[in-house]
Structures are given as structure tokens and as C-alpha cells.
Length: 215
Image (cartoon, rainbow, N blue to C red; front, side, top):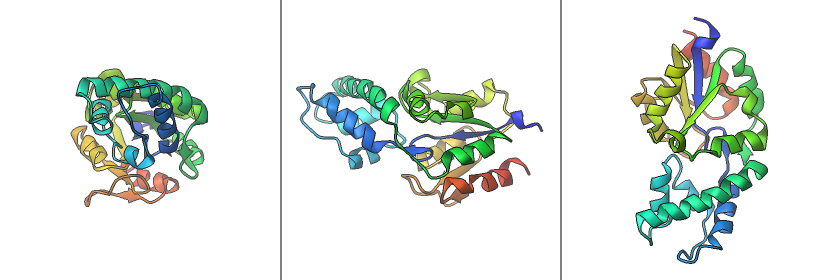
């Protein structure tokens, strides 16, 4: 099987970077101009939303207003977020670019996230890492579940063997839905599922991936 038939598909938050500080700052900037919500968004607030789709996040963060209004507020926060994060970026996990560059020699690299449209592009813009990825997909663009989006990028890239790398139990469930193996990023925001292989730092990923994709 040639390298272009094998893929590593990544979650984003908690797997490739931690953008919580920048996102919280941008949300609070947006909320200064929104009169029907009086609250400060903290890093801890955002931690509770990791891995969830935007409609669910809206209900978690803005539970004092209707679900419809909560989504409107989150959409405004997200507009400011994309502008800010595309410039300021987040915290990349140690040796990220070096590890991705090594993996790129043998596998296609992709991102599938539950984020809004434009968030992955902001990650690329801030850290100049777009050159390493062959494809990406998100809930904001398709409205599909993460498992469906994993299957989508596999199908459209004609991938024969893939692994999904993520940090939450929701990521594990999504990989199962897409019928692909899962590697838990144990340095992220979630707890590992008992039955899954894991890495404690992203620099250990190449060895773990070879065990799954090259056997």
C-alpha cells in the first residue's frame, strides 16, 4: 500500500494546540457589546466545552437565555474569535511541527474537528502549518457529526487505512463510528478509554502510528 493511501486524521483542540486563553479573551471582548449576557468566560468554562459542537457549546456557556439566542451570541463571539485567533494563535504542543513534518513523509495528514467554519483556517494562519495537511473538515461546514466527517475525508481522499488521533472520549466514539483505530492524546483535555493506545506527548506519535498503519 502506498503512502498516499494511508492517513492520520487529527482532532484540533487538545491534540494539536491549546487555544483556550486566546479564545476566552476574544469571547470576553465580544461580550462587552452584548447587553443581555453578563458574564466573564474563563479558561475553565472553555475546558468544559471541548469536543462539543457549537450548538451544544452555546447552551453550556449561555444557559440564561433561550437556545436560539445563545447560538446567536456564540456566533458573534466566534466571529471575534476567528479574527483574534488567526493572528494571536494558541499554544502548540511541544515538537508539533517537527513531528508532523516527519509523519508527512509517510502519510497523508488531515484534521477533523467539531469547530465552526474558519477555525481550522485560523490555526493554519496563525502558525503557518497548512502546508503539512492534505485535507480538513468540520461540523460548521458540513453539519455532520465528527464520525461522519472522518468517514467523509477518508472517502474523498480514497484512503485505504487511517487512524484518528484525539484527546476526548467523544473522539474515541467518533473514531468507532467511522470504523477507524484511535490513538488517545493523553496530554489533552480528556481521559483515555481503557481499550485504546495512547501517547503522553505528540513526539511519540510516529512510533505508535507505525504500529497501527504499517502492520
